[in-house]
Amino acid sequence: MRIIEERDARTAHRKECKRIFDKRFSLSVEPSSEDDTYRLLDEGLITYADGSPQMYIKKGVIDKMLESMSDDYEGSVNFGHHDLATDPISIIGEWRKTDLFVEFSDENDGRKVLNVRPHLWDDHIYVQQLKKQPYTYGLSAEFYGELDWEASEDMGIPVIGSIDLLDFAIVGECGNVGSSDIHLRGEDVKKLDELKKKFKIGQPEEEEKIEESVETPVEEEETVVEEEENPVEETVIEESVEETPEEEDDDIVEMLEMLLNQVSDLRKENESLREDVDKLNAKLKKVKELKVSIGNADKTEKTVSDKRYVGKDGIGEI
Figure 1 (cartoon, rainbow, N blue to C red):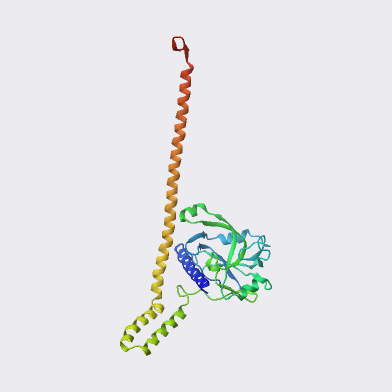
Figure 2: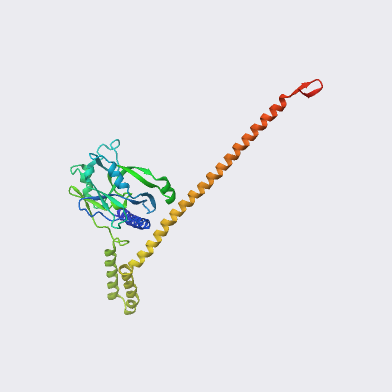
């Protein structure tokens, strides 16, 4: 289905953007190593659908969140972030604090990820329908976040300094790309596939088509045509198999430059806003000074006028 293929392509692109951005700030993202737990939240970058930065979750946020959460906390799993006010059957499962698990990043940089073991209600109509769909889903956390204003100003994007986890939802496309690519099978949420290699979505099928196109002209066309066409097609195969790392390096550099340029542009906008605010403050100060000087002049004029009188001979001093 085209819409699902486009979504999966966006997800792969966003994962790569997050990986590059987090690596730039000594962070990275790895899939959960637990068979029955699934990624709910990563410390690091959260992106928009096009891969551009949306927000950044600081190191240590997940640990602080778990410390502040009560041991008897019980949360719910909802369908597509629907609430009970608008969808009375939107709750499709539950979880407890004991179902949350924290892992360290493999980069040994202090960053952590939060995994969850959800308990879905197998007899719920939404769960039954989700199991029948051929495509994957994602987990999307619902939380209150507190901004680190100083860090946000420095990085040019919202930086989350602390969070309070509320619930989470099963969605079609989630903000935290590490929580995507899950599929419902039986009573559990299972991984459909491992994370696909960078920029190689659907590559085996493409290679088969290329091989078929190589063999077909050999039988039907003249030798001269074969000599001209076959090397070209073989080159295409080599590029798709052997030269991919170089192409990926170029793509990585390009995406990193794009992200850094966006951060730079945001910083320039902040500086421009600061200059505008300084100019407005300066003008306001001048207006206040002018108002004070005018007020003093009025008082002086009044004092002078009080010392004069109007008589038959004209104006005279008292």
